[in-house]
Image (tube, one colour):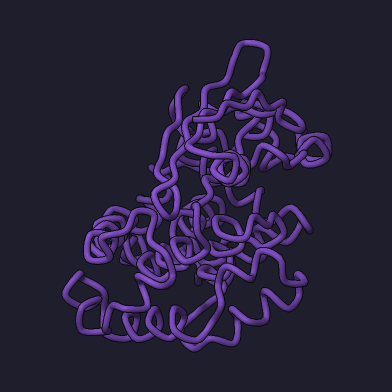
Length: 276
């Protein structure tokens, strides 16, 4: 076992990021890591080996300085209350890009609870946690359908796992990485955002079409929007659209977005007869 005391770059909260004061998780190939944040802000990582420490640094986003985001948007009319209240929040990354891609495909246009159940069923079928691209590629579309995926999404996931070197996207030129994902049939803007945020570690790609953002926008506008309209919600945040998505979603859940609430979204849904 190895131990490292890491000073995160910029304002950082392990409790907000991982929803627990003490984090521990399996990593690829049997590696593991755990982490705890001390009162002075230092994060102590204990891991099976040095490589696992580096993987934990990525998963926990310890090396990403988001100070500029906080400076620019702390007083934004829409995002400001969430930015001020949730200082130190970072995206909840996956240990493999393949796992992020799995989440992206499972979560397409369905409720998050149902998506998580399908995701866990696929992981059990892999017998590998976190799931690797090799393990996921071995699953046939029929096996994925047996886990609860619709046939079209099962086909999309199979193509991704068998034709794209997903882990190489972390080191590919930014434009090239996104192009490789976007040209895959069945991978829309929301899925690209999930893979970019949770798998590659980018902050510039928003979660366009996220159902919770649709609800947030419905509450703000008093009508049920098309998923693509959420791009307008994120556009003002420029190269921080991905992180803005994270804060808007967390803030909306906590009632921190001015003029938007889950109750207002439900009223709009009921009035327009749209499903959430």
